[in-house]
Length: 100
Image 1 (cartoon, rainbow, N blue to C red):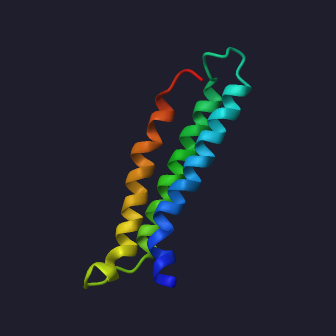
Image 2 (tube, helix red, strand yellow):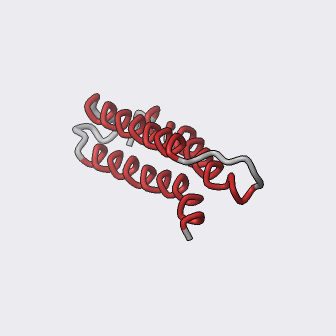
């Protein structure tokens, strides 16, 4: 059971980051003075949350032991890499959006 939890840690962390980042984006858009744009503070908050998520994924990668062996032994490490890649590429567009 521990092996399964370690294998799903990266994608689960990505899911948590996805929800948190888009929730912050929605809150920032709801509080925007002009409905078309967000303020600089909101953009800074989004960038800080995204960078914190990348840092959490890197910490997860460092914490997982790397073992020489088959796929079953290296799947937790692969799951962490999948989560890092998904966080880097699927959450980055929110930082570039200028409209709500």
